Length: 503
Image 1 (tube, rainbow, N blue to C red):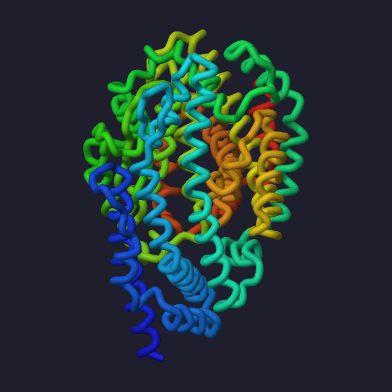
Image 2 (spheres, one colour; image 1 turned 30 degrees about the vertical axis):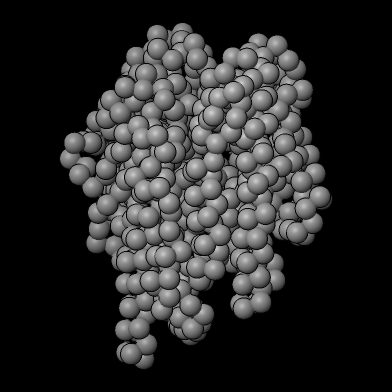
């Protein structure tokens, strides 16, 4: 038994070392510091870890363990290894896809444009028809990559079914993430019904004002332009983004200058992905916060979203076992804190005190940020429904293209391109992790406002409370946070209420 225990600890050490290398490889490629991503090479160096024999050994240890605490630790290790084993199968395909997209360009109106820059250009383009041309060109790149995405799915589902007996991808993820997808879908279907009227009225007015067209008549890519709000750009300058971040932390009693473990990369490299991102290769000791600032409200919200991850990972208790710090059951827990900081843009108090907006302007921005958030929650509710239906028959391409377009278009009233039916899908039902986090974040924000006031972000006591939550690392789950602050998990009351109040 002692030998087996030692072997498990060797496995966990291997997980720690390989995770560090995988995250670093991904970060270097994402940030433009490395031209080609080679996750496959990293995984091959750890072939002894991510192979069927090691996965089976961890599975046997998990099922044999009687102590609840150790059993949970082994459960996470088993699923992490299984994911790594499957990732080792799919990594060459995914590396090629990442490299292809990083180097892809589109031709629009005689101009050669990097594929990754198209969303930024669409958001800032006033000409409706040019936005259409940009989207059409981008979709051609998506279509070119779809066979690879489908092959990744074939390999992933085949390995889970043929080698480990998981015939249903939904059942597998429900076990891995300990989530009742049927319950969550039901709650979010109710959310869609309860917010439909206010969404249709308010979003319809916003779309008409910004595009001159009616809701239901334009593609989903135009939402980036609708929600761009360029009239407020003077307040959301790219050179003030990190300053606003620092002021927010100081208000919470956190000193960004002392957070030597959180590294901010705001350099503007040509091949750097413009979307903010956080990497935590070894939390809390090393955390990276990436941004390629372009300015504007959306840029601030994206950065603060990733900053929420960085603060969570960077404030974990280093005394925790590595599994409790870095091997999560799902991503729903850390997304709570991402949404919490992102949603500061919905707070007139924060917008005036930290960013410096006039009060009336702050109320306008908060309103539009809230309406944009309603779009996103409805979109992800639809994504969950689509994905659950998709995995009932994942390789029926014509069916799934139509299902994707119809499901998301119905919930958002923007027209979705069927070509994106695979591109708009993250592995492991990440859509559900987001939805769980939105539900719990609305509870946590309500708790903070009730306890410390609407300017909770200016109270070091609130920062202390959050540090207490962050210190627990990945030990707890999303719904545990809800219970800790006295709320019922999966209760959408506060989530619905914050959007109904927009009307």
